[in-house]
Amino acid sequence: MDNRPQHIHFIAIGGSIMHNLAIALHHKGHIVTGSDDELFEPSKSKLEAVGLLPPENGWHPDKVHDQLDAIILGMHARKDNPELLKAQKLGLKIYSFPEFIYEQSLDKHRVVIAGSHGKTTITSMIMHVLNYFGRKFDYAVGASIQGFNTMVQLSDAPLIIIEGDEYLSSPIDPTPKFLKYHHHIGLISGVAWDHVNVFPSEDEYVKQFDAFADATPKAGAIVYCEEDAMTSLIGSKERTDVSGLPYKTHPHIIENGVTYLLHDDMNIPLKVFGQHNLQNISGAMAVLSKIGIRTDQFYEAISNFEGASKRMELVKENEDSILFKDYAHSPSKVKATTRALRDQYPERDLVACLELHTFSSLTKDFLSEYKGTMRASYRPVVYFNPDTLTHKGLAPISKEDITIAFDERHLKVFDDREALIGYLKDQNWKDKNLLMMSSGTFDNLDFDELKHIID
Image (cartoon, rainbow, N blue to C red; front, top):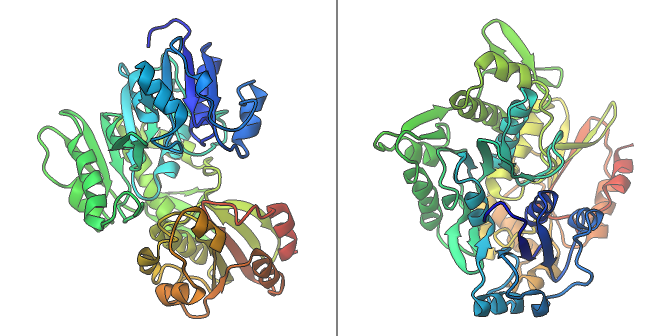
C-alpha cells in the first residue's frame, strides 16, 4: 500500500483484533468498510463510536467492487463467503490479518511473541515497559492493555511488537499467523498442544513452533523458556548466526499476598503474581534487553504493570475472599492459573470454575489433556453448555466424560448456568477465593451480579 488514502473492506470486521485494525486504519485517514454476520461487545460499541459499524448484519457482495484497494479477510469468515467469492472473481488484493501487518511493517524491526500460553502477557509487559520510557513503537496484541487505546497501532515507528498466534492466517491460507510476520526477534513461552481442529496431533502442533524458530534470520534471536521441555528443545537447537536466549522463572518471594522480585539486594513489589507470570517477566526482560532497555529500567517499569485485560483480572475483594476472572481455557493455562492463585493465597481454599468453550476443550478425545490441571483447587468446577457443542458441530459429551477425563477429587460438573450460579451462592466464602476461567462468557454471566456472591 502507498501513502495515499486507501479504500479497505473488512470481511468479518467484528473479530477482536480485526475491529481494532479497522479503527487504526480509520484513524490514519483510510476509507474503511466492513461486514459481519454477528457482532458482539466490545467490538460493536467501538465500531459504532467511530462510524464503522455495519448498518446491518450479514454478508453483502454489493459492498465488494473494483474500486476497493484491498480486502482484509478475518478467520471467522468461511471459504464460500459471498463477499470473498466476489473479491476473488474481481481479482482484488486479499490480505489475511498477519499479511497486512507484515506489509505495513516491512521497514520496522519486528519482535514476535509466540507460545501456547503467556504470549499476550509477555507482549503486554514489553509494551508497558517501552511505553513507560516513551519509546516509539507500533504493536498488535490480542487484549486490551492499560495505557493503550487500541490493540493495534501502525505509524512510522521503527519498531513493532506483535503477539504471534499459531492459528491459521485465514480461511484460504492455512499458514500459522506467526510465520507471516518474519520476525527479527522471536520468543516462545511454552508449547502445549491446542487447536485440535487444525492440528489433529501433538506432533503436527509442535512442528509449527519449530518452523517459527527456524525462521529466525541471521543476526536474529530466538528467546525461549528453558523450564518448558518442548520449548527448550526447540529453542536450544543450533541455528547458524542466530542467538538463542533461554530464560526461567525470576527469583522471588511472596509475603502477605504480594509477590516481590529479588534482584541484588532489592525486593521489587509486583501487581501480578504466579509462577507463569514470573516466567513471563523473565521472557519480557530478555527481549527488552535486545532492544535497548537496561536491567534497572526494566525493574523500575515492571513494578507498575497491572496485567492485560481478562488475565487474572480482579473483580471483587473483601477481607475474606477474592473473585478473579481469567482467560485461561487450554490445559496448560488452567493449570498455571489455578496454581498461581493457590500459591499466592495458601491460607485460603480455592474454588476454581472452568467453562469448556473452545473447539479443543469440547472435543471428547482432547478432554484427557485436562487430567490433573485443577489439582491446586480445593473445589474444582467445570461448566459447559450442550448447545455450544451443537453450534460447533461436535459430538455430544456427558458430565461423566468430563469427570473421568479431569480425574479430580470433589469435581463438580454443570451443564446448566443457573445451577452453577446456585451452587456458587450456596458456598460459605469465608477464607475462600473464587476463580472463573473461560475464553467465553459463561453464557453472558453478569459479573456485577456475581460480585454479590462473596459479600
